[in-house]
Image (cartoon, rainbow, N blue to C red; front, side, top):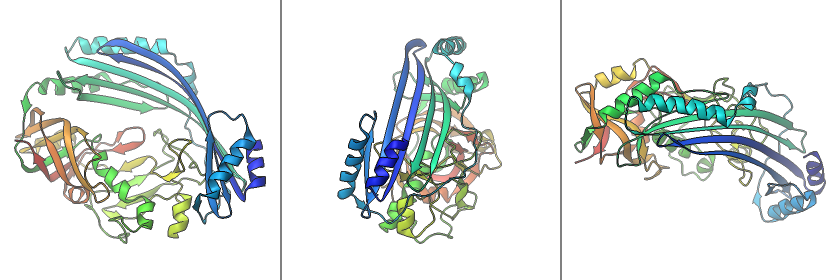
Length: 429
């Protein structure tokens, strides 16, 4: 990498090398039977250069010819985007606990045994189709540039995903857990899922009218994704974001606070620096309903005259970095999920959604199908809803919060709580 950077620095005004190596295993059970066990390995290198005020990118999965990669990056820069930023010199970042070496000793055979034990427990309690997947990866990556930055980090990730499928459908109930080392879904969580599965045997098409709706932590992405789309700095630069000129203003309920914590010890996307070498930090996007900040990368921070927040993230070596939030967290409330359900006379518990990218996402509009959800009547779950659609505007919905769950669920890269909204448009019969 050092040699590649040296060559690129001699031929360009500025140069940056990003690299990533990953190795992992997976074990998958389908309908309680072992379906496959795989091993995967991958590596990638991305070279960015700035020449005559323009930026270029070249990438490879196998560095065989450094000079050729540099020439590709320079050719890309010759017709590339004009930029006004410089690669940062970052030499001091905090040391984070992002890697658990115990994962190195974990094997597929051990996971198969753990999986079979869990499957036997589920099959003793229900006849439903049960799927179970495990994935774990170990990765090392880093970034270095001509300004003097040379940073690297190791990380480990373990994921377990359990699902009960509704008969005759592709949807169902699920639980998943993410950690840095071996982690299991508890028997109590499985029992809760089985209890909901029993309730789902009764199917109900809800009435078409506004009613209270509980978005569980795994369905909040339908609303939060609209905020983060509008909060992307490219839409601020093009002046089309509905959040433009609203810093310091109330945009949602004062019960709602949202921030990022990229240094959180118990979350899986933690990193001391982004893929551009900018230090990461904790800060609020929304505090008590007020818009406080948006994530930025080097390019749009310079274009907007803002400070880089350390959110320049590459989703692959083929991509330029783009502003993305890291370890999104929200403020829990003061009611349990059961208390929220008990307080609803008639409403919906949205467990999982489909079509979450439909509608005018930038404007905050949503129209989503309830893939898995439950009808609430007189404070109790009485059956599974079918043919049900939820619609509205994310900012209006988030402005009508009745209660927030008192538990923060760690979803790996998010810590979220269920939210009860006063009124959401429900379309059924």
